[in-house]
Image (cartoon, rainbow, N blue to C red; front, side, top):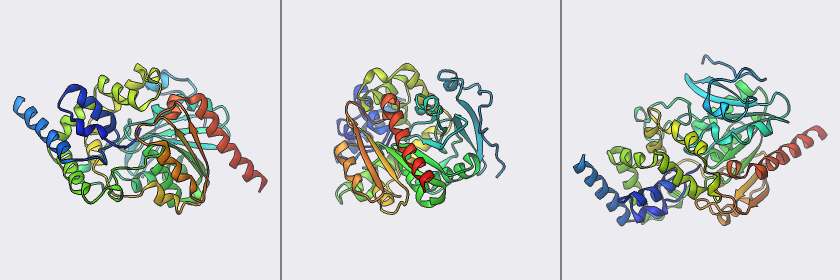
Length: 372
């Protein structure tokens, strides 16, 4: 899942239904459409509320016994779960497959390994496939960002470094990065930082970061910053998060992100919700929605050396397909494939379409490497 436009903000989150609509985009971002009305509504809502109340443990390269993880138990016995110690933090990792080219699957904002639960068992039939919880997400550790400068810890440089270290220490050979949403920026960052470790990057509905300061007009900028500051530094932020971090809130978010709402199952809701209820999750959320700096996809596509594949769920309400198409003209982008009737998380909503597209990209470059 991703950071995207919170166009519902100007409808306010004062009512229950309004809060769910805002939660839909806010689970992923705070919008490019910030207005005085939006900000004042948020503050009024809060006022009303207040008044009312480097040791490491390697991942097995073959199929060890599965950990007692509900996600693993509900998918396939072939998927194993363990922790990897990175810079003193515990990082959850899942793996499937013992042979073939290595793939590392990277989730988006608010996601975790479980968002790849329909992909690992299939891809593991012909590849060594890993999924990783980025620092601060899923069941990885969530160090307190308030102990650092704003956005010093949770940023794409950190996650790019995490992915590079994971490939080097755990995968043990250069790998393909398969990424959804903001995970795509982390994947591109890793490829740019450590080009010898990354064979190629596939972006699935990569975040276009509409909250980024480069995309804000001069008029929007002070209001965006004001709202970010209010959310991060006052009780409003936790109130806001509490409107999202419920079964109903997550289901409404996902039902708008997915073109096929029948794919928003109780299992999926639990996979996304439960890690978000862990201690520290709210602070990670509030820190990241304040992140308007760092790289854009365009910045990294300008300099990346490896081949890039772009897949896009054409019905994505947050990252519009027409915006995504503008990325196909960068030199190393070799394909842009749109999938009609699919939303923001195509790997989960349409795995029957996406799994073959992943392996087609991987096979193409494995074959070319053999030929050369």
